Amino acid sequence: MNIAIVDDRPEERKSLKTLLKEYTAINSLEIVLHEFPGGEDFLAEYAPFTYTVVFLDIYMGGMTGVETAEKIRETDTDTPVIFLTTSREHMGHAFSIHAFDYIEKPADREKLFKCMDDLLKTKTVLYCETLDFSQDRTDHSLPFPDIVSVSTAETNYLDITDRKGEVYHIRMTFSAVSERLCRDSRFLPINRGLLVNMDYIVCFEEGTCSLKNGQKYLIYTKKAKETEQKWQNYIFSHIRSSHKERGRRNGNH
Image (cartoon, rainbow, N blue to C red; front, side, top):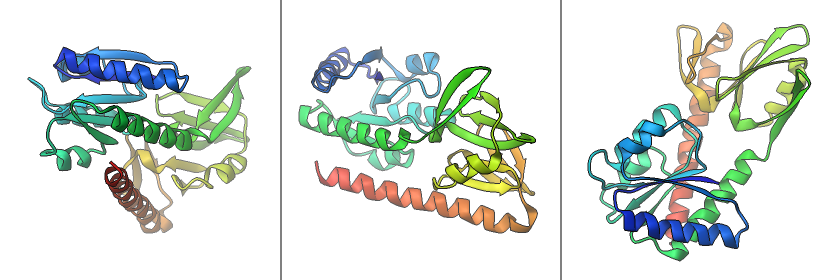
């Protein structure tokens, strides 16, 4: 586990580190901890999808935790953010940027352990499905959430783009891959021989689908409205599920 702790108070970072080391030792997990005294320091070294989780103090000198999280979300929609706070005043704003949870300071052992349990359960469910293939005699295993798009390149060949921008040109049929991926609710066919992961869609406009990585694809014109509606329904469903899950977690603490 690669964990970042962003807090301007050294004693708070030390306390949280001690608890996290205890948790990972009990659960036989490897851990690498990275400390940052402020949002600016963290963002100066930050790269998308680097951390298993980021702990962010909301009240810091300079850039606040919420402002730091907003910067993270510009390029990274998946990495869980857990806020550290002495007050619930800004929780509404914090959760509007899809924070996983919050922990009141000083961090309570039971609360932190429960939060980490929830996090690991979520990530286990999220990453259990993978697409396995070979390219240039190298085996690859891509978790479904990491797949941004799948498109037909030529007869019996596909181009698969992952969230890091890597493009895999592989010998597989589109029908075989799409049959498997379309069992997952996040994948949407938008044209013949083309699937996209709805988690990476930015918008639909003028007959195209724009993705967060800058890719733009033509959509099947006759089904344009239906395709966009499916994406909107997917987003709404996930917002609703997120609110329910957040309420469940907060109600148990």
